[in-house]
Image 1 (spheres, rainbow, N blue to C red):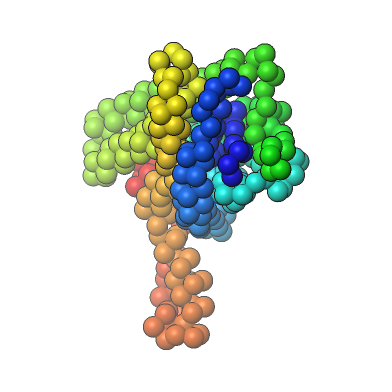
Image 2 (tube, rainbow, N blue to C red):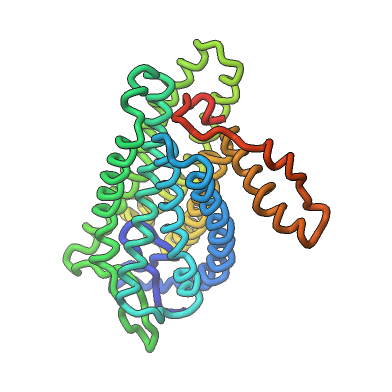
Length: 356
């Protein structure tokens, strides 16, 4: 672990600790720090993220039947999170050992990681716009918020996310360093800093600035509209909106700030090895925190909905509890109770109700 780095063009999945050929900093302490911190945290993200997002997909397909634009976006967001999660076990192993998975997987997993990241951000933006249309422009939303338009918007979103992820495939390759193999980004030597800074700016603009601007503008109008209507659930809706914005900012802003400081160290007068080391540790910690967002997405975008909770309860009562009742009587569910616990399917209801 002494000499290899995990160097992503947009995201430093474990740590990127390079200062050029003439710099004396080795980053050994930061690599040991990553080896201890990342594997257990990545494992927790995989367990909870996999469980939550698989439940979302199951309920959307089995119960809600994908009958609204919101359902389409939620399904794609869950798929994005699963793509993101899929690559984490490989990076967790790489944080402790050298890269043993070959160059093809190095490129593919780098691209998959970034594809999951960017598509997740973009579908959160689409869900924000979807809420905005449903509440602020309710009449127009009747024509615009259809499953067909949702599918078309999703296809375009995946295409844009793929384009944004291309550097992860193009620049990443394996390399043997001191008898150990690495998987890291290798930019043209004469344009290394230019590419790093360009991709960091792209990451900040697409991953933080644009989403936050859209959220602030959209949710400001949503709150104004909700406060003017006579809806007994409007206070819950306003509270949920604030939670969505605060959670998104809390999980992503620190990491975006850290990578901006990391790749523009000269501009921020960070030149010492100690300062750079602390900055890279902060990047590792904040990046892991940002990953937790894929575990939170099912909670704030799906499970927070009243109907979604009913579907989830119905699933556990019918599938899980009835199965275990064969072995443990405490899980027994009366057949008449199961028959009476059916719920109507999603029909593109107003977002005020769907968000609660």
